[in-house]
Amino acid sequence: MRYLPVCLDLLDAPALVVGGGPVAARRIDLLRRAGARVTVVAPELQATLAGLARDGSLCWFERDFEPADVVEARIVIAATDDRAVNAAVASAARAAGIPVNVVDAPELSSFIVPAIVDRSPILVAITSGGVAPLLATRLRERIEAQLDESWGRLAVFAGRWRTRIRAATAAGATRRNLYDWLLEGPVAAAVRAGRDADADRLLAERLETGDAPAAGFVSLVGAGPGDPDLLTLAALRALQRADVILSDRLPPPQILARARRDAELIDVGKRPGDGPERQAAINQLMVEHARRGRYVVRLKGGDPLVFGRGGEELAELRAAGIAYEIVPGVTAALACAAHAGIPLTHREHASALQLVTAHCRGTMDDIDWSGLARPGQTLAFYMATKELTSVCARLVAAGLAATTPAALVENGTLPEQRVLVADLARLPEAAARHAIQSPAILFVGAVAACASELHWFGAVPLEA
Ligand code: SAH
Image 1 (spheres, rainbow, N blue to C red):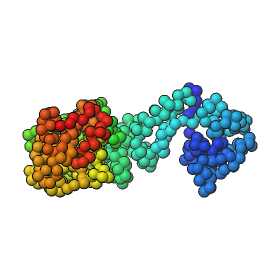
Image 2: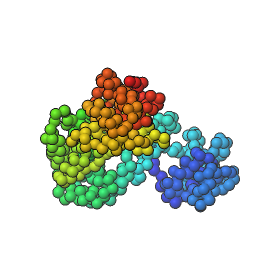
Image 3: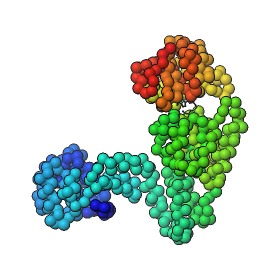
Image 4: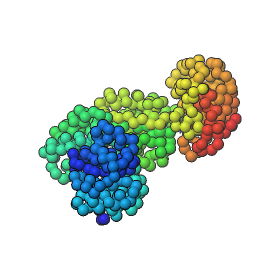
């Protein structure tokens, strides 16, 4: 090991930075976040630093560096683009026994500054010892994605309870189990949701009984349209924590592959012909697994609250007294439009977007066709394949021109994506000819024609 990582307490400590450019600005920002009182020596300051100097947050000596500048400092950083100046700063600091860092010159430095992930009070510092800074940066990006913003709050919460936890649990496995539960389970979810009182109550209950409170937790998660890159960080986190995943048919294997290895996977996808008892069975499964104290992920394609019956499932959880969170997902209309090159709104053509289902509880008569036929908007029909002919015909009957552009996006965001562009009159026949299958979403409106020019993903659009 070439360096020893340590954490320096610089609260109210005098720090000296030599240099007033962007590199110096980044170091000064770090020092100030750690509470240091920063003095900067530089003939000129870049704009942000000049602002800080003006309002007194920074002490500025508007001149060249002099060796005596280091005397007061507890830490020194040289960040000029002049090697001779940097070397002079380094030797002055070293002579005075003050830790010094010269940016990008480890050979002149007595310490180096790591890349950090700041989830205060949790800090992760990463360094390649100056050998491969880009690798350290990459690693930092990965860790950033793993540690969501709530880690800091969770650490504060755990710190607040630490003494009581020590008093109530035996050291060793019992306490470790408690912390596992605390950091992965419903308490963490409550802290993330900004409900510290609930978190306090759950933890107090558990410390009293010694057991996890019976009611588990359900995360209602939107898996996005299919491409795993379109999972949100929150969705990924839920998948990686899940004990049980109740999944719809839509999420493809690439997404399920991101889940925790030993999570139990239950396919609850509905099949054509399933009656209402199917949904009741899903609700019951969710409640049962949660009651066993498990972390249940209810995974749905797209967004869970857009044509996903998420509302009904939440009502069921609420009635059963089970805590839940909702993780939004990228809904098919947004994702498929983006991957087909269709701007959903457009200054000239569309100032509104309607999300419509072509698969209704009642009949298609319940849909307000004249409202849909109003000009100046974009329509996105979910579950459009089965009723395609009738949707197009009804729109025309309600007053949309038969020449209105439309686009059908099949398997949007997936490598096998196909886009068919045609006008309302010709689309149903063309869709049949190209055998477009579910899942597919139908866009109607002037913007749909943009797919012919703006496409960038997958195969070139099919035309009628
Ligand atoms: N909750 C989902 C929608 C569920 S309804 C969401 O927010 O996206 C299912 C319908 O969504 C499908 O019939 C289809 O119209 C649409 N859909 C979902 N994923 C799709 C995809 N990758 N490509 C095209 N359409 C998709």
